[in-house]
Amino acid sequence: MNPMPSVVTTRILHAPEATNASGFSRPWVWPLPRLDGLAPGIITPTKGSPSDHVELGYPGRASSPSLVPVFAAQDGIVAYAGSKGSPTLCLDHAGGWSTQYAELEHVLVMPTDRFRHRRKARVRAGDVLGHARRSALGISFALTRFTDDGSVSVDPAEWMHTWSVLPWFAEPSRRVPAQRAA
Image (cartoon, rainbow, N blue to C red; front, top):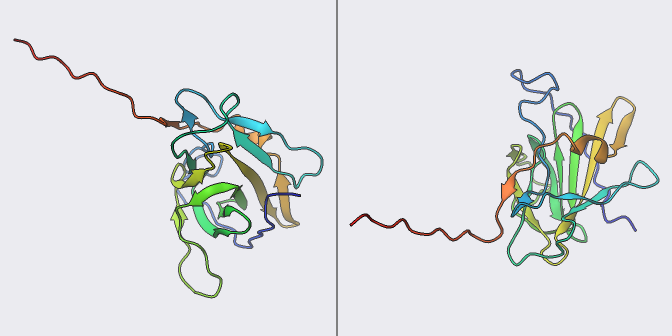
């Protein structure tokens, strides 16, 4: 059973005028942060059909006593936020890109409601969208590109090696107070 819900969006965003050569004003960001010096990784790579997703987490670390944020991979709008089995998010980005985040502990963005005509929430690359599950310390992640021929699932592993990893500290560091000179 695929834990990624079938959430498809039809909105394609256009890149803002002031963008870099890749079409984005900001670099792409890993959905999970560097946690106390440990970089996240792809725990379960894409296998088989191109519609598969990847499981992101921390090799060698199975849980966390504190909440670990899930970041927006790129600037975009919240196309879907809700609980379809588990808290799930779908963001639409410029150039026809879409990212999907599933198996979260909870989301921080307002749930979408297709019956209300409210403006979709905008996010920036690196904004905290929610938190990863503490017990499994990971999320499901998918990357899609909308083209003239329809939506195409993209293997995130082919792209994520160039994305930035933001730092995060699960436990606050203890600072030693400076001693005053006598």
